[in-house]
Every structure is written in structure tokens, then in C-alpha cells.
Amino acid sequence: MSKKKIGIIGAGSFGIALARLLSDNGHAVTVWTRSHAHAVSLAQAHGNPDKLPGVILPDNVSFTDSMETALAGVDAAVLVVPSIHVRETLRIMCPFFPDGALLVDCAKGIEEQSLSLLSDVIAEELRERSPRITVLSGPSHAEEVGRGMPTAIVAASADPAAALQVQEIFMNPVFRVYTGSDMRGVELGGALKNVIALAAGVADGIGYGDNTKAAMITRGIAEITRLGVAMGAEAETFSGLTGIGDLIVTCASMHSRNRRAGILIGQGRTPKEACEEVKMVVEGVNSAKAAFLLSQKFGIEMPIITEVYRVLFEDKKPADAVADLMLRDRKAESI
Image (cartoon, rainbow, N blue to C red; front, top):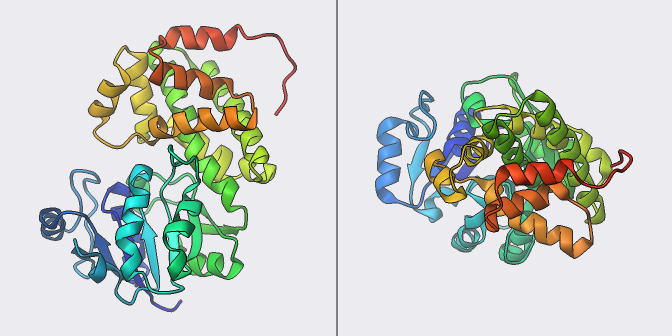
């Protein structure tokens, strides 16, 4: 494997985990963060103990608040910022992004204002630079990736050569990368599973059991698949790592900030209080409104997504939302 120069744009938990992975693979890694003080703190700690305690990066990983420095001569830029900051970050990147370089998108979400998938936002903002866009997604908690626990993930791109190159850059004995072409399906799976994980967390917080969670997961993937197919994705994608795989881990693990926020909401916190207590960006909150609006736009029945939306934005009581899901009209099971 040839060694590459990689710029990681974002110094949160997953950005640090990927810095560890990529440096272990022998690549030259620079991590960008917005704040000069934060860049100095990261360099002193060789990691981000606030977001990913216990993961120490090698001395050859560098940190900067200069986008020009982070992107100078890179073979690939890895975008790992919250979805709500993707567009503004891309506008900072554009003057310095090398023409035709790989852009590996690890952000998960849907832009609320435009209802655009993030790959479409990237293509729009970096159109002058002709980025080779690949989405990297799957069941991959930063806490486990950073510690070298076996993980499998998907690199999806409309450009098969780009997906193969990302596979080569990232893959190692504990990080298995599959390639795919259904970028839209991979993105939707990664964004919408966070909303379903909120619902699963709410059920946990209320005190419901494994039966309830299994129902949330299986009917949740049915909702995601219906919307995905309506938006041009392949149904098979949602049976794989970036569909049911990512949904299972996000609904079941306490590493999941979306599940943790849902638990707090189920226990009586307001959505605002829950997000503040989690102390990290809860992507499912941002994606819930976009997912609800997309369901309306495409005329797709998405009852779990709808109830999450009502709890988050219409002050509906979580127990009432679950009751309304259970008392819906009788029907046959279907995707």
C-alpha cells in the first residue's frame, strides 16, 4: 500500500479515531480544528481526551487551525464534522482543496434547509475543484475504532476507482472496508438510523424492554428502506452494514449519543436538556426534521420518524407517541 498524505477535517471523537487508524496505516496525517487554542491543546495531549479519552495519537500526527496547512498537497481529505457545519466547512475548504483529490465524507445527516444529502452539498460547494466523492459509513463507534477493535464499514462512490482507493487507504487487519456504488443509500442509512436510535432510546428511557427495541429496529429499517427507494437508492443497501448493521449498533450501544439522548427524553428531559447532558452533537435531532419533511415530500409513510418529530418539535409526550404507534390501524407486515 502506497503511503498517502491525509487531511482530517474535524477533531471530534471520530476524527481522532480515524487519525489513529490512518497513522497506524503509515499515512501522513494532519488534523484540522477551528480553534488555534484547541489545536495547541490537541497537540499537547496527542489526542482529544474530552471526546475520546484513552486514545493517544503518535507524535507524527499534526494538528492545525489553518485549512491551507491541513489540505496542502493532500491525496485525500476526510470530512468529519457535524452535518450542520458541513456547508460552512466546505466553503472554508474550497480555496485550498487540491483539484481532483479524494473527498471522504464521514459526516452523517441531511441538510435541513435544502433536504439535500451531504454528497450533493459537497458537489455543489466544491464543484470548481472536481472532488472524487466517497461516503464512508457503517457500524463504527469512535470509541472502538480508536482502540483497534474489529470493525467493518462501506466506502461508496459513483466513481469505482475512488471507492477502491479509499478501501486501500483505510483497510487494515482490524478495519475491513467494503466498496459499493449506492452512495445515496449509504448516506440515507447513516442519517436516518440516528432518528430511529432516538426512538429506541426513548423506549429504553420509559422502561420498555427488548421486544420494543426489536420492533423499533425492524420497523425502522422498513421506513428507511421505503424512503430510500423513493429517493433512488437500492433496497439491498439497507440490508447491509450501512443499513441494518449501523441501525443495530446505534440502537443498542451506550456509545450511541442518539440512544443516550433518547433515554434521557424518555426519562422526562426535554430534547434541549437531553442534548446538553450528552455534551455532543446529537445528529438524530437535526435529521429528524429533514426526514419528516422528506416523508411528506415523497408521500412515504414513516410512523416512527413522524412520532420522533412530534416528540422533538411538537412537545408530544414520549409515552403517548409509543401508544399511538401501537394503536395504528391493523395491517399486514411489509417493507
